[in-house]
Length: 225
Image 1 (cartoon, rainbow, N blue to C red):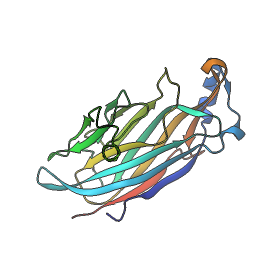
Image 2 (image 1 turned 45 degrees about the horizontal axis):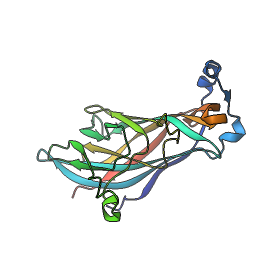
Image 3 (image 1 turned 60 degrees about the vertical axis):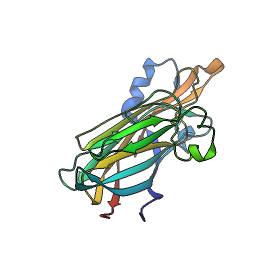
Image 4 (image 1 turned 180 degrees about the horizontal axis):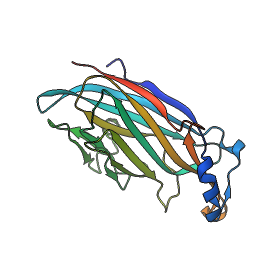
C-alpha cells in the first residue's frame, strides 16, 4: 500500500471562457480574474488495496477530493469526472457515494462482488473520536454514477439553507476488476460564488481545470496482493 497518501492532482482552477457568456442570465456580476487566485482542485490517494471480486483479482481505490476556494469565496456546485483509459476496456464495478443528502456520518463497505454500500453511524456513537475516524462525513449534497462504465461522475451541491459551500474534503471510492497500473483523466467544472447582503450572491464565476486542456492525467497502482 505504498501509494497511500499520494498526491494525484494539485491544479489551479481557472475561468471557464465558454461559460462566461452565460453569466448574464444570473442576477450577479462575474468574479474578477484576480479574485480567482487560490482556487484549486486537489486529489489525493487515501488508500488502495486488492480485493477479490467474485473470486477474481480486483482493487479498491479511495480518493480524497478537496475543493479549495479563493479568498472570501465558496464553491456552490461542482462536478468531478474520472475517465479510465487503461488498462484497455476496464470498467467500474461500483462507486460510492451514490447519494448523500445529509451530514450524518457513514461507513463505506465492500462485499465479495465489489459492490459498495453506506452504513449510517449510530447517532450516539458519532460523537466518539474513534468512531469518527472510521466514518466519513459529507458536508454537502452528493450524487454519483458510472457503474459498469469507464466514467465515474460525482455532482456536489451546497445546502441551500446553510449556504456553507462544499466543505473542505470529500471521500470518493471505486472498485475495479483489475490490478496493476490504472490511469485516466480527471475533469472538473465548478461554480465559485461570493455572498452579498443577507446571503444573496453578489458575484459568481464558473471554473474548470486547466485553461485549454480542461483535464488532468492520473495513475494509480493496485497491488496484486
